[in-house]
Length: 469
Image (cartoon, rainbow, N blue to C red; front, side, top):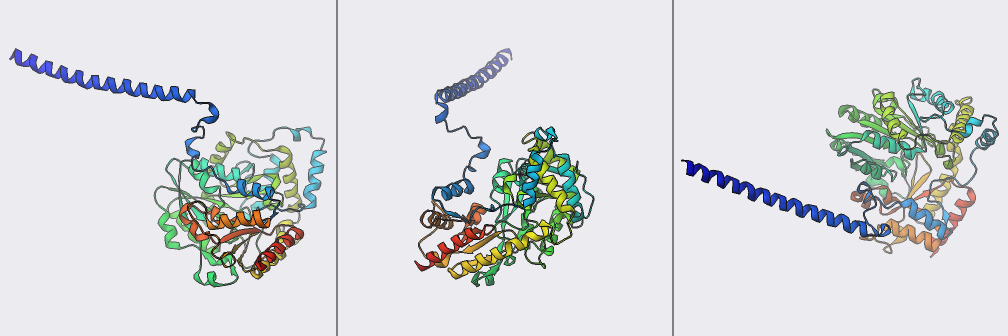
């Protein structure tokens, strides 16, 4: 019995030693390999290392604005691509800048409140409260940011967890997808699609681009954290209808989802029957919606680089936490200027002279002028109900000269050609789509008509010459 027991113990000991010897060898080997890799890494000059970019940004390196802004400058092109106005903003904004610079209050040259200059958040609350049908708390329900971009960044990084899902409606402003992915979340996308009849028309409307309701609901599930909408939409110019917003709102409530509403073009609509509707004003939506606005779009001065987020305290707090460890506080002087602009407009808010009410009349003639020129040169324009961009189908005038391939989409090739060879800068629309849906937009380019008449006339002349070739 004792011999058998000793034999069994010895066998167990042998197996133990074999297993652990293997484990030790594997650990040593792994450690040595890891050590070798680390050693090799330290020997590579910093400028030659290929692991410097954080992994969460890999795949997000390209940006259409970086490429095409530089291309326009390089070739001295007439720029009707980028969404900036090339003439002076309202005179009162310039006057307020001068007044603020000469203000004896020296603290205007120092840091201000991190979540928003007191005078500015109070001005925004006073202007927007009637539009949201509630008294907005300026200190807890408004966050001032360095433009709508950081407002979006705060929302995505303040709400999204790793592997959460965010629903994006295409086409969308191109930063949406990178921001969602950098937050560790998964974008789930649905594309607005033109009605079959509209694609055959020589001129169509942004209202012809619609969502499939069943397809939209199919994207919602237990992992859906938020949906972002953009109305009026960039680049199409679609103004979402009450019926469309009510459907989105019902899904947000059914699946308990946060709504991020990008409304930077809120004041720029052209049809009295298609006015901008704030989704946060729909029943039971205030408590789950944050609304993003832009001083650059509101006062036609994109260089202001100030934006704001409006929403309930419990949602704004998440955005504040992200903001305080990123931007922290925005430029005091600019905030003071914008505050004075809001106070000025508040006094005439319900009059036709109010800039918010008159700005569409500033752009509508420019829109119609460009639409007509695009039609005459053989393109098929989409007339926007909001914003200041026109999409145009260029397939009839391009023929087979430009085709999508593994290197580039058709619209990217066409835009590069126009910029380099014709000195006309536009923007390819497939840049506003994810890879799965880019084929839907390969025949479209985006034009901006918020330009002085001289700029539009030069662009139209180039288009006329292009048609004759």
